[in-house]
Length: 46
Image (tube, rainbow, N blue to C red; front, top):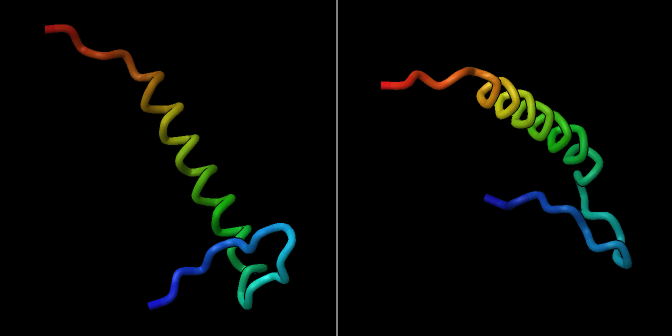
């Protein structure tokens, strides 16, 4: 298994790197939405 990581700015892009950016953006968007909705739900007091 190989991990697909972004390349450094001063290096040539790695194979398949162009596929990584949209997936990372999607994951970050879902994570932010989930955290926002989770924080907006009032907590029940006991």
